[in-house]
Length: 308
Image (tube, rainbow, N blue to C red; front, side, top):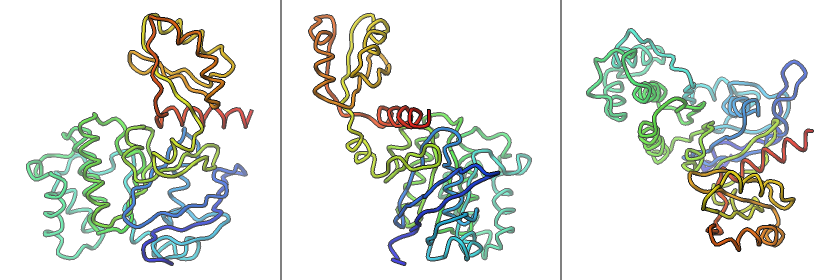
């Protein structure tokens, strides 16, 4: 396996109680890359990540993670993985330092005190080292959980919706820490529902009904969508949205603040359909690149129609 590649798998599939949750997952992730998994609840994100990391054995397929076989060498993979769940799972009646010391003991970390102190400094927890974990805000709890996840110096981090319920500034600070870890060579797999977080990933994949619908860098995903998007601002936008949604060449109309994003899959036909509305003096129209949210709304709509 190429040393520059952290994960290289082909055709991974998994079923539970006869229901296929993931089908034919094929993916390559570089070392030091932040790879995001997006999709609605039940789309197979968490199951996919757990198979890639050796936490769940696939029913079919093959490949390697960190140089180990994802079928036969899962124990070796798990020793190199740090797993951070959505729910805070440390002891709320222990301090920050006590929690990290306890986790370091479980991992059998050498030079435990030095490693714990380094983690506290790296995640900006120094002023809270003696604070009880239960009294921390959501953002600081996430930092503490990330510090605990990295104590054993993993080569791969698995983050399952790590910033759910965290305020925007704490989310931004958390992602700065993630990018620093990636710069140090740690590979990160993250599942998220937030489009701004998806844009922070080096590459991403969108899953629906257990299949990858698209993958690539955020700009590649947007460019390959085939969508043409217009932004319209003006008065009575909700009435306008209702009218536009009835047009056959309009795929979606989505409110964004004080404007609407109007998208279609055929540029010329969309422009022709919008022409009467673009002639209205009270409306301002600007063509723009489709955003990730525009793309994913279209993907989930098309996937739902395909299953109907």
